[in-house]
Amino acid sequence: MKSDVHRPVDLRAFLICVVLSMIWGFQQTAIKASAPDIGPLMQVALRSGGAAFLLWCANRFWLREKWNMNVKFTDALKVGLGFAGEFFFVALGLQYTNASHISVLLYTAPFFAAIGLSIKLPEERLSAIQWAGLVTAFTGIATAFLLPVFLSGSAVPEGEMWLLGDFFGLMSGFCWGLTTISMRATTMNEAPASQMLFCQLASGFAVLLPCAILFGQTHIGLTPLMLSSMGFQTFVVAFASYLVWCQLLKQYLAARLGILVFMTPLFGVLFSVFILGDRIGLPFVAGSLLVLAGLFMVQTKHIGLVRRRRRMSAQADK
Image (cartoon, rainbow, N blue to C red):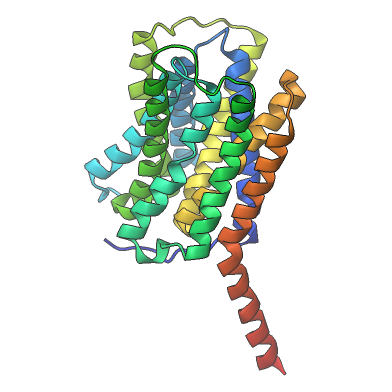
């Protein structure tokens, strides 16, 4: 399989990931706020279908990217099922366990992606300090979301099925990691970004709409809040932000990019504070600092390489 050269994460990619993390963090608030009017599974299904249509129109009349017909159907299917599985297991897991558990377990995805990519693609392998940064960033997420639960004395969710819910949360992280691996290490890597995303969105709609019907999430209330939330999720999240993410995966090393999205749940909490009136404490602050420290450690190798290149360039100019 032919593969393009992928670059280490630079400042441009980092700043784009910050914006994407803000958008995806606000996405959780939008889903939660409009849940009384439309079920979460139905939200994700309809936004996927709407965004898939928008993407097809955009590529037909604006982007005009030539889709690669040599992409294997099985590779496209892996990407699509991984995308649909991520959201399906999140919605299913929330029925049995705490949202804080799901938030942490979903972000095991960079571990699955880093392990799979390091096996399949040598250039994606992380150094020892970068693995330490990955562990540090994940520890920060666990501190921010799980420590308050332990301090409140409700570390174990009520009900006998919480272990099943946690398993579903872990499966959501696995599916996300599988999607990233499939996008980089299969023939999908040869597809343009619009084709990558269309496979995910179309599969998400095809899989999640029947799931929403099966789980009884068919009620749709046409309120201003619901319409604005679905507009944001369809146009900004599922269409624009996911398209930018697919483009980044074609240009940069995916294992490094995956770690940057640890910022997403932190932004989600901040938006819930300002919009929904939630409160944060010292565990969130400590966890945020650990995440930032982990992100810096992951980029340390690249920062040192850039400095050496600048030093060599300066010496050559003298």
